[in-house]
Amino acid sequence: MTYASAFQNVISNPSQIPLGVEKSFIRQLAPLQHGPERPQERPPHTQHVDWASMFPNEVILHGPTNRKVVSLTFDDGPDDVWTPQVLDVLKRFNVKGTFMCVGRRIQQNPEVLRRIIREGHVVGNHTWNHPNLTKISLEEVRNQIQSTSNEIHRLAGVRPVLFRPPYGALNLDVIHEIMSLGDKIIYWNVDSLDWAGLTARQVSINILAHVGPESIVLQHSAGGKGESLLDTVQSLPYTIQTLHKEGYHFATVPQLLNVKPFR
Image (cartoon, rainbow, N blue to C red; front, side, top):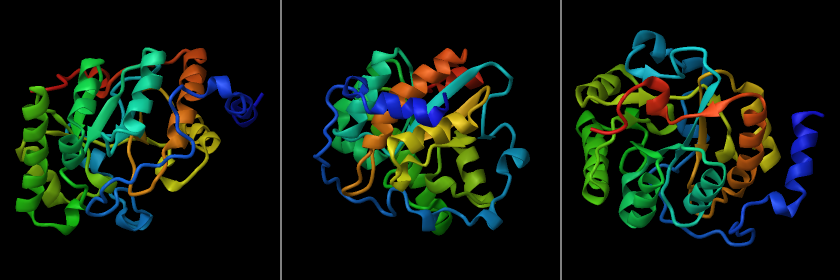
């Protein structure tokens, strides 16, 4: 049976859909500076630079070995609609994830942030309001990162060491600024494209078709104004179960890299 046909069997069975998923309700969240996810903010493919080869210890695409371990990462939260549903699925399958959080949403949803940490997940820094860092001053870059780190520390008593740039947008000056703060830049080597309006079936197939040992998978736990992440929530059970059957285990990004999760 193919991934596509097997997933269709799962998703057509309501018992496989996590409890609490609201199919008809999409909460309107305050719009962020640039999105949060907009294709036009991502660098054109012809302009992609292999930053990980240039900065192998600072810009991370995947784990360093060949273990059958996968890290699930979730950007742009926390909100109080989709992030709790993602957390419910991860709790159901005893999987720990890594949540790259936006400062303004942390400020709006402090209890969800605390839940993420309380349930054993790792929180990373995804800027204060999701700008393209290559389009703002270096002073603003530093402020975006430090303000978010300070808010996480204020609410949860920890400071993240992981940083993910919105849209994956970097240049040399931005990289050096992030390095000066002592953060590790966490990219990914599997993009679920769950932000692009795909179905749950398509999201799961995207992940399973590209995942490999020590992959870092990009997903989302919150969206832009009016954006549904039902596809993310519904795809997770099948993705997790399939990878388990294939002998994969799950780890947070710090576990994958053997680094401390917080300062």
